[in-house]
Image (cartoon, rainbow, N blue to C red):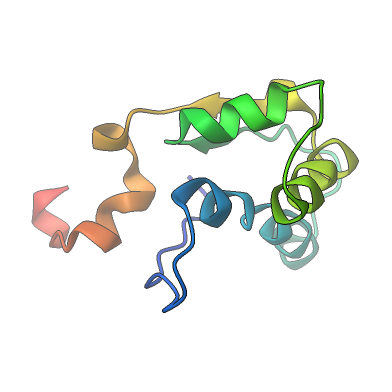
Length: 103
């Protein structure tokens, strides 16, 4: 794993899939910071709803979701996105309050 991000939810009520989709903005930043161009990338989410959004061809979403989902084919391919069970998601360790020895 190269990158994981944990943060406190905003005070405004936002669904978990919407929070997951904001991660799309991190992809370009990470590639620029690492100065890698030709690398094989894999993206993991513990939200089956997000996987459904990415693979949905009907594209009937609310504005927020539609704006994030349209970025995915521009910056990645849907085949790069995979599901990981929440219990197995190392990106959630920080939000679960685990110590280094508990992972």
